[in-house]
Every structure is written in structure tokens, then in C-alpha cells.
Image (cartoon, each protein chain N blue to C red):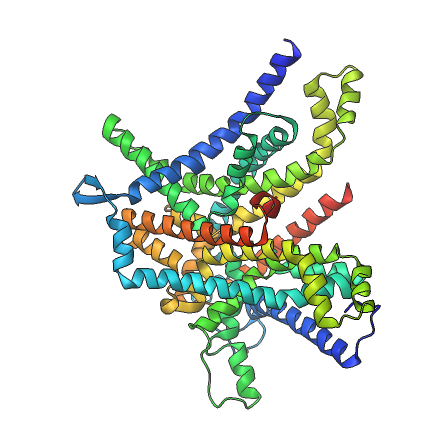
Length: 287
Length: 284
């Protein structure tokens, strides 16, 4: 066997698992889902091509309101995560040195290793009517009776931001770490104040990290299921929950598949816009 | 705003306090989950009823402890079984993918690379339903045309393994490829000029070099599988993995037994996390 055939054989052997994986588990399932979303049941076992599922989405206010609400809440959660994470990342990357720096950075990673269920359970214990926060507030004399802090939008937001924090802190710390201190010093020497240095030197430098953090956080939030359901209760109105209802509870796969595609389209559009606005590509951001 | 630039003391104090507050926010939920595992009360909430180990070791209802709760232990076993398969599959395919993308040139390489990254941007719920839809299509087709009913193509452990494998493979590929990129191919060439065949060279030189990444990605794959919820939810059959069983109990309202379980999970995943950091750092 000469080297060229060996190398071809090697290529085929390495390509096979990749192609099987991508075709059988990603491409075909999504194509099938698209086909199912484009059909309508006219009689038992009889289907017709139609856009009925997509029209139903736009006609029924509950569906598109849930959709819009999920999108807006996800964007807000991303923005809040960025606002909270940026100063912390800056502190870790620029104000600390050596051991305390790597220790605090590792500490940021801790919640990621714990299952999302456990994290959400922690917030339920903190926020519920008989929970820790309510008791602390009563003890401090700030409120008269027990307060229920679960099952509202603020609780959902707290949980979403918490769950996303890591995916914002890691890219921010690594990008801020790569900023040369002398650039910041030069900014001050040239007469800049804290605000102008931040606006003209630090933020432009950190932009790639900000974008990749925001994209990951946004997608994770949009596709989240546990946190909105457990912290928001029945009123959470999250789009993934609607997909679950159509598929598992109502057994209306056609509508559920259409919802799945709408969610996919929404996340693609927003991620694509984000990448275009910041002039980045997906493989740079992800890889 | 770097240490070499003088800043007012009050600003520094305030900034430090903010960072401190952030870490309290980060740690608080985990601490309360752990602490309430020892609460001598039927509910994981205040008032504090005293210290007890019942939620781990008690063997009678209604205060059934974790280690005597057959249903929960079964679900831990199911999760373990699924995670082992997902780890084996995703690490094997991930290693193969890493060699493919780092070593070979072929048409449509960039397109395939983009496709390979896709599972990172598709929400887990959608990965789950698309695999559910496709496998039922196959199962129905087989049923109608050949009259055979393939049970494992309906929601089952098998589908959960496939669903988790479909996105965890992307992660293992990225971890292993990152290390393979740093490998000096001259080492492999040296082995070959010393008489080793290409495959022997890869097995004795390259694979040992990749070992930290392979072990590290295996730990990450195992944990991601064990803790996965979104994809699993859509594909789960009658054998409930741990996350699904826990979710059910959380919605019903739970006893501190769940805290005991959470504490155990935190301990196990914490150990594995430390192990993976240690494995990947030691050899570099």
C-alpha cells in the first residue's frame, strides 16, 4: 500500500464518524422537523403541505406574546449579565496579581460545575416565602410578614443572570488580561480621565470578548427551560415551555416543530446581527 | 484604573465591596442548598430545626434518607449508565474529528467545520425535539412498511444517549483539537524515521501527548451528560435519569432529601472538576 492510498484511506476513516454524526443527528433531524412543521393534519393519518402552523403562531396572541417576551427577557438578561460581569472581570484581570487572581477566577467557575438544577434549587430556597431572604428581611425589621419573592419576573431574571454569569466572565477576563497596562497608563498621561480611558481604550479592546460572551449568554438564556419554569412558576411564559407543551402535553408535533424553527430563526437572526455589528465571525467567537 | 494609577481610597473600597458582594451572590445559593441538607425539618426552609443526618441515612418514610431511597438511587444509576456511553462515544468521535480537522485537507472542510460548531448555537430543547421527531419518523416508517416496532427509537435511554452525544461531541472535539494543534509534528516524523509506521507513531507518540486533553474532555463529557436537562427532557422514556427525577420532585415540593442529594452532586462534580484541572495542567 503506497502512502497516497494510505492517506486517502485515513481521510475516509476519519471523515466517516463525522459525517455519520452530522447527517444522522443534526442535518436529517432538522430537515425532518422542518417538513413536519410544514404539514397540517386534515384527517387521522392524512397530512397536507401548508403553512397553517406558522399562521397559527401569528394569529394566536398567546404564542407570539410568549415569543416576544422570551426574546426581550433574554436580551435584558444578557445586558444585565454584561453590566454585572464587566467590573468584576476587570477587577480580576487588572487589579489583582498572582495567586489571588487565579483563586478568584477559579471561584467564578465553581457554579458552572454544579448542575443547573442544584443552582436553581438554591435560589428557590433563598427566595421562597419561608426562605432565607424573607426571614432575613423580617429579622432586620424591614418587612412585617413573610414575603414571597419567587414566581415573578425578577426571580426569573436573578436565576438567568446567575446561570449565565460564567459564560460572560471567562471571555471578559481573558480579553482584559491581554490588554497591556501601559496603554491605560498612556491614556491617563495624555490627559484622559477614567471615563474617556474606559470608552476609548478598554472597551474597544474588550469588544471581541464582550460579543462572544453576549452571544453565548443570549443563546443559553433563550433556550433555557429549567430556570424560568422553576423560578417563575405558572406565569413564567417561556417559549421553550410552550414547545414542550405542544410536543409532550398536547401531542401537537406539527405546531411544536414550527415553534422550534421560530426559536431557531430568532436566535440565528440575533446572533448574526450581533456578529455583523461587531464585525466578527462565528468560528472566531466559538472556536 | 489600574494599580499604578492613583485612585481615591473611597473608590477602591467601593470597588472591592462590589466584587465581594458579587462573590456572595455567586456562592449563596450553593451554600444554602448544602446547609439545609442537615435541617431537622420536613422542608428545606427556615426555621432551622436542628442538625440531623436523617436526610442521608434514615430508612423509613416520611423521612426517607437519600441512601435508602430506591427510586432516586435507580435514577442515579440510569444517569451513570447514560453518561458512560456518552463519554465513550463523544471522546472517540471527538478524537477522530480532531485529527481530521487538524491534519487533513479536504474539500468543504470549512463548511463541515461550521456544521460541527452548530450544536453550540442550537438550543438543547430543539436538538432534543429534532431527534425525537426524526427517530419516530424512522420507527413509524419501519412499522408501516415492515411491521416491526423498534422500541429503542421511541423515547428511551438510547435516544437520550444519542441526543446528548449530538452536542457533547462538539465540546470534546474542540478540547482535543486545541491540544493537537500545539503538537510538534516533527516528533511524529522522528518516530517514523526511526522505523515506526505512521499508526505506531501516532499510538506511541501523539496519543500519549493528547492524553491530558482526552482525559479532560472525558471528564467534561461525563459531567455534561450527567447534568444535562434540556435535551434529555424531550427524549426520556420510562427510565428517568437523575436530573429528570429531581426536577419532578422539585415541582412537587421536596423534603431536604433533595438537599442531601445536591450536596452529594456538588461534592462529586467538584472533585471531578478539580481532577480535570489537575490532569490538564500537570502535563503542559
